[in-house]
Amino acid sequence: MRKIHASLVIAAAACLFATGCVKRPPKVLSDDEMASLMADLEIAEGYVQTQNAAGAGDRERLVEYVIAEHGVTREEFDSTMAWYGRNVDVYYDILPKVERQLEKRRRKAAGGTEATPITDLWPYSRHAMIGENGPGSTLRFSIPITSLTKGDRVNWKLRLRVAKPVSALLGVEYVDGHRHYISRHVNNGRNVEVMLQTDTSMQVNRIFGYLMADRRADLPLWIDSIALGQQPLDSTLYYKITSQHNYYKPRTRKELERERRERERQDSIEEAKNEMENPGTTIGTVATDNAERRTSNSIQKTMAKQPQSSNRKL
Image (cartoon, helix red, strand yellow):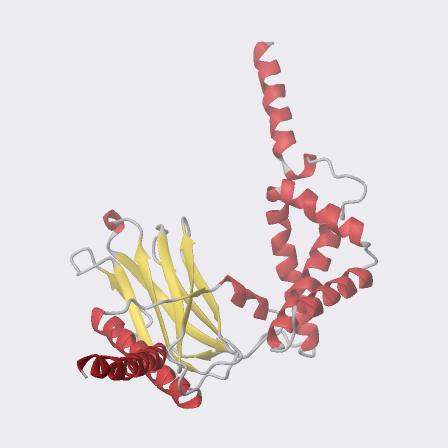
């Protein structure tokens, strides 16, 4: 009897934490309704990011428009977002539905095509091994690429012979020196995939990345099916650029000293420019004027006293 009771308690606890057993208030949208709304909001966000002149007000008006198109009031939308914020597991469960909705809209926008053409940029062997006797537990690459169109996507894919925990990074360096990257961690899987969204306003100079074993004891790692795909800009997926990070290269002491001297040189030029435009207003000029004025007053006083002393001698 106790075993039955314990089983019922465990089942009830599992039901409380399971997705289907979470009580949903009346004003909260269903998972399907929320997935469809979120897909359109992601598309709207991607559109705003491609418009350089768009501001916060434009984004908010677009959000209001999307909500209204779905027949949802602002109160219902805010209540739904608050409820999903308290039920994060349910929110994560609908993300695959959002991705499917976005893919469906992408195909519709492309005229019903099933797949976007992909250009393979990988110039090396499709197979690799990270050896335990090597200098490190990392597979690295850096490929100069200037043929990418602004806004293109780059997808790095590979497969592990045996599932091991690994970390992957894919980055881009632009012509002006800026670097962005995105990282992924695969805890227990053979397939590794990292998608990088390039900026629509900057030209790509090179693509770089690495795959690293989390534990050196897992080496060697055997890798195959390596590919680096190039895909054209997809406005429905451009929002993913917000999940990428800026990469700041550490500066040397010489670079810092060069910057300091350049700042001092610019300050000197600015001071000289101000002096030419506003003569007689600097501290040194004012001090000189005051000194000359004091000297003149002293001479006048001395000359005024000289006749008196001459009269006394007579």
